[in-house]
Image (tube, rainbow, N blue to C red; front, side, top):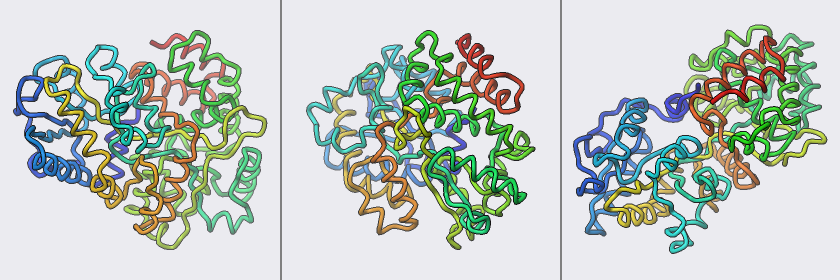
Length: 433
C-alpha cells in the first residue's frame, strides 16, 4: 500500500531532520492531556515544520498557554499515536490523514468534534475549500482541519511526444483511447504505469468509477453498504481499466515498473511514454530527477478526461485532499488547543509559509498569491482544479481500513494482469474486512 512517507518524501527533502532541528519539544514532554503544555504531534517535514514552529512561537508570545511541537518520522509516528491515544501521554492536537485514518480514532471516542468551534468561528470554516473540509468529516461531523496543501491526481503528458505524433491532449475517454492507439502505432508506450505497486493502478479505478457512476458509488463502498462492490458502475469501471491494459495502453512490462525508483516518471520525462496518471507530487519529483523536463516546458498537465454518458461530474477529482489537525477529546487543554488551530491555520503568515514552501493551500482565494511564485502555471492549475471541484474523493487505500486497502491493491494488480475478472474482483472485495 502507498504510504504517506512516499508522498511526503517526494514533496519535501530531509525527512530525517532531527527533532531538535524541527523545533520539537521532544517525546518526553507531558501533554495537556496529562496536565502540562499543549502538545501538537506531527510528522517530520523539513519544509513544513519551520512554518508550524513559527506559528507556535507567535501564538505563545500572545497567549498565556504554551504550545509545543513534537515530531516523529512517519512509521514511528503512526505507531506512537496508536499506542498513545487514550492514555495520559496522548497529544492535544495530532496530525492525521483524514478519512479512514481519522475515523478509527473517532469511533474510539478519542477525537473532539469541531462543529461548535466552527460555528463560533465562521471565518475559519469559510477559509477552507469545502471539498477538502469534507475529508475531515466522519459521519457528518467535522473532526479535522486542513493543515497542508492539496494533492489531486492529474494526467501528465509529454508535449513534445504529443506534437510529434500529431495528437491533442484528450478531453474525453474516447479521445484517450484514440491517443493510446496512435502512440502504440508509433512504438511509444501510451501511458507510463508503475504497475509493480498497486496504488498507482488504483488511481485509474478511482477516476473511472467517479466518471462513470459519480462520487456516491465510492461513498457507498466506504460506508460499507451491502452490494456496493458489485454495483454495475463498479463492474463497468473495472471492465474499462482491464480493457485498457489489454489494449496495450501501459505497454507490455508495466508490472515490473516501479515508482519509488522513478521508473514511470522517467519514462514520460525521456519521451518513452506519452502520459502518466499521478498525484501532483510527481511535479516536484520531476523537478528533482529530470529538471530539464520542467525548464524546457515539455511537461503538460490536464484533468482526467470526461466519460461520455457517465453520471459523474467531469470536474470531480480524486487524490489526497490534505493532511489534517484534530483535537484529542481527552485533552485538558481542549479550549486552548482549539484556539491555537483557529489562530494559526487561518493566519496569513501560515498560509503564505505553505505557498513559499511550494504547496497549494486548501484555502479559498490564494490564486493571486500563487501567480507571483515559482511554477505559477502548475500551482495555479492545481488550485483551480481543486477549487472548482464539486467533490474531492480521498485515495481509496487511505479512506478504507488498512486491511481492506491491502486486499484492494492485491486484487487490483491481478485485475490489471488479467488474472481475475471484474466480477471476481468485486466478489473478493465484498468479503474483505
